[in-house]
Image 1 (tube, helix red, strand yellow):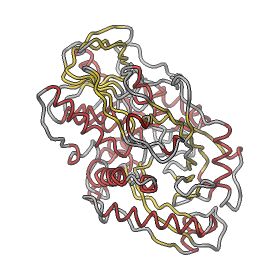
Image 2 (cartoon, one colour):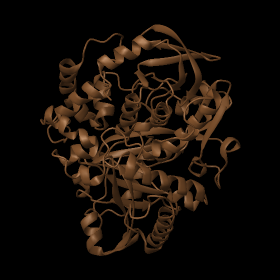
Image 3 (tube, one colour):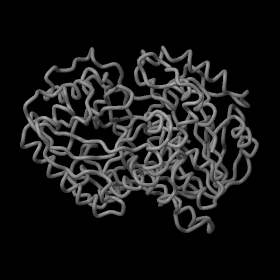
Image 4 (cartoon, one colour):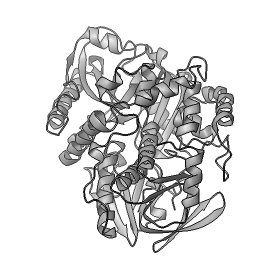
Amino acid sequence: MRLDAARRDRDLDRLGAAVDVLVVGGGVTGAGVALDAAARGLSVLLCERADLAAGTSRWSSKLVHGGLRYLAHGEIGLARESARERAVLMGVTAPHLVRPLPFCVPAVAGWDVAAVAGLGGVLGDGVRTSVRGGRGSLPRARRVSAAEVAAWLPAVPPGGGGVAFWDGQLADDARLVVALARTAAGYGASVLTGASVVGVDGRTVHVDVGGRRVAVEAGVVVNAAGVWSAALDDGIRLVPSRGSHLVVRAERLGHPAAALTVPLPGSRSRYVFALPQDTGLVFLGITDEPVGGPVPDDDPQPSPAEVEQLLTTVNRVLADPLSSADVVGAYAGLRPLVLPAAAGTGPGDATADLSRKHLLHRSGSVLTVVGGKLTTYRAMAEETVDAAVGVLGRGARRSVTARLPLVGAAPRRVLDRIDAPPRLVARYGTEAPQVHALGADPVVAGRPETVGELRFAVRAEGARSVADLLDRRTRIGLVPADRAAAVPAAEAALTLEAAPRRDPGEGAGQRNARPSPR
């Protein structure tokens, strides 16, 4: 399951051979489709212009959630799907990458608000216990004492209790994508980054790799290019929405152990979260702003209004308010929301009210899958490959991915016995001892990432550039000052581990690469 230089050479040698399924886009949806198709015995080629998780899939809140907001909008089916897929991820697919995280609404936000959140948590528990694997996967929502709030959220003024509910937190969204791609490769899929799909003529797909054009015959082309999907399928209509986060040091908030949950003024279904990470950081998010005009290739950035909204909202419940000087980084991603005419509507006109249902649309040999949420990627992939099997007339009719652990996954009792630092186990699972053996020195003083992680990323995870290493395989790049300090170590890892490349890769300093829209 290694995506190394030798594997890339073999995949390049095979480029041009006919395949059953050619997937465009190396985000969570594309990687999920590649795995599902390969696990059903189909030949698969995944083409990604930049790198795995180079687009929207690395800009999420890093949550695997049960869909409480969907309940508020009356989308019970979508909430059940989210709860079911969360149970699959936590119990089978990636228990090493997902952990339970308490979300606390402190009384200082208002007991009326806390009561609404508590009711939502109870309803969410009902949905969770109604799906297979959900019962017992998370604690039940409950009221918490002032002492518990103080222990979980030291930055909140003391003296008040609150309400808590639990959800799933990913160690890292980009790591989930990499694990999916590597597992797909283990089932025979070819995974090529730096491979742009520049055109589709019937069943002939034109791929550009390092300036070399290759024609590939594909039985089905799966368009999983996210917000860029319309470039391959003009039959879909998208309304991109920007979700932004701010990054602050955990010590500034007293090293919280729970997600501080504060409602947006005037809303009972939208919240700002302060999400603690295992890297000594806290992410503040998330916004939901419509984005007009052509979709840019460069990484989106939070607007000044979004920064102010996030800080103002969370400061309502902090004893010592945050300022812009406390923000050490920021990131934003574009959600590919489908227009109501194509996929149903929510109760309002704002992007926050648009349905998060995904859309599967066929146009000739191209199957476009777009929309949805990171949590439900597997269900989206299953439906897409079901359709592909119907078109091809071959391949297993039933998906096996709900029972298929990703690389590194193991039951919790096994993970707890692994002889490696717990943080590495939470990111690499059963492969943590290999990563640890490659070097335990920190990449940047004061941060937990190790030299071994950089070396393993080149050796096994398809990293080919500094940007791959710092912005996706690790997330050091979320703090620009730390990224600058980490560049020499990343360059050294590439020199030490990388074999000579067959084609030009992404430049060492390039940060804003995007998946190809076509």
